[in-house]
Image (cartoon, rainbow, N blue to C red; front, side):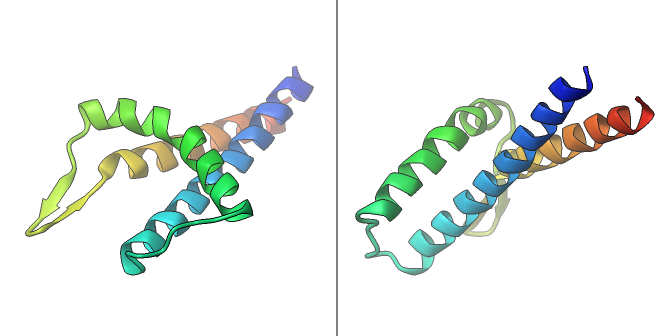
Amino acid sequence: MALFLTIIWWALWLYTFVLFGRVVIDLVSVFARDWRPTGFVLVLSNLVYRLTDPPLRILGRYIPPLRLGAVALDMGFLVLFFGVSIAQWIIQRILIAL
């Protein structure tokens, strides 16, 4: 049981870095509009989008973006990030209790 929970915790930890990668790629594409990834960065960005798009699309159906004038903040990303963080915390507490 402890091994299984440890593997899940590490997977969530890695997914947190994938989410940070998504933030970096999105920020670069916002500030450098003509930037197009090539080579290894293209493969990496496709992997990041492939891993983060399905849960963000599901959350986007139910959680509308927060509108601040002309800017819309994607609240689904924040919910996903906090959900992963809370799941990690719960698993860590279970592992400590074992």
